[in-house]
Length: 147
Image (cartoon, rainbow, N blue to C red; front, side):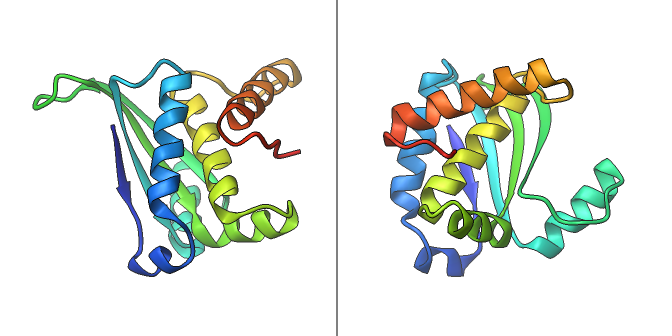
């Protein structure tokens, strides 16, 4: 299950119902449909503060993941963690990639999910594996590539 937290105005910028459906599909494709995750869509200021606090980098970024990995008492589901996406940065990247905001947000959500289950891009080999998996999942859901 995805707990989606977003600013009110975002309802006018993107199709949240379609995004939620596609995000749920990403969970299924990663065999995580019985896992819980929280997704908060924030602005660049909040993202910059989080990036500074948790990574020591004083600038905004597109997506951050915070792994939790515990059992939810109410549902008994495993809670993977929190994903934060900057709406403003995602919107800029969507325009740069000539794609919809929904597709860019989904791409970033998949990236965050992969981090929560142990993928990273610290080495070139790890980066290739992670980005390949990210593109594969995005393509299965949308029929589009982010490249």
